[in-house]
Image (cartoon, helix red, strand yellow):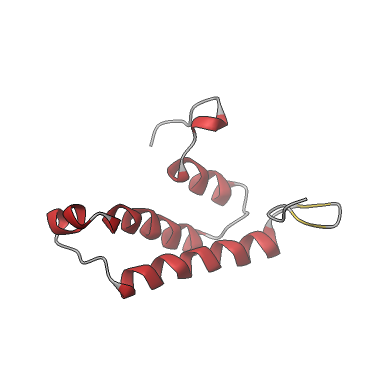
Length: 91
């Protein structure tokens, strides 16, 4: 993957995942789950699911949700904190 744009407003999930691993905010296993969720996200459109031959069903939705929970857990336990809580919490 090429380097992310300098302006983080133009970053996407594919840019954030490897950076989070490099900073040890998420584990490599969580990064794999997040990448799978990113791939499955594209299956929401029925034509896309049909083109790639992979159903977008409850199972795929549960896999994506599991990735969200893994990222949340890793950020809660591994990301640096700011005053009063995890980096991922709203201030």
